Length: 258
Image 1 (cartoon, rainbow, N blue to C red):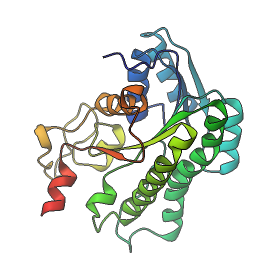
Image 2: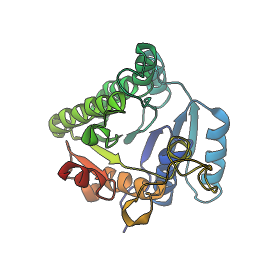
Image 3: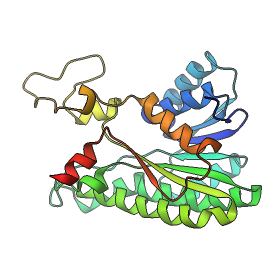
């Protein structure tokens, strides 16, 4: 299916690896031009080289830490002509309310929650002035599971869920769609580092907890998430706004019924 993304410019934060890189590959295969943003210049360069070796698209990279609003504004000045924004960067610490210190809690939200807010705050007016656009926020299922050992994650996701729904409900008047994509377990280095699967290509460490029973006996691939994001951003999904697409194999639905 041609998603009609050829020639569009897609800015992806956290675009050097994991879901961001998987999304970049899917977008490039659809003919979209890319702006990949992440903190590490070396991994950005590697991802840029890999994509250019496979697809004849334009790929710009920008090594930028988005934890401050000033840097977000600076990024927007360097990259104004953006048709689709994919907010994907950042990580929030796990641990109970009593395990996560105030400093770590603030650091986690400065890594993800406030960058999403600031990217939306900055790029929405730019898109409005350009005649429209699409914002896809990569969220998570923490706000649905509400695990007692992940309140910082759950509350951060809940805040971004509401941001997505509010902007997505009001955006059509400005020809802007805002959609959330909430993944469950995805085969990324970060998930393997905090989960029970070990590092990519390696079994779980001896003595580690037994891996849980995943839907379809596996976790999602980054390309599956990238495909969901690309479809949500495309005109094939042109009447979708203010909602969150959950890609977790049914995990959160099952948990909700227990």
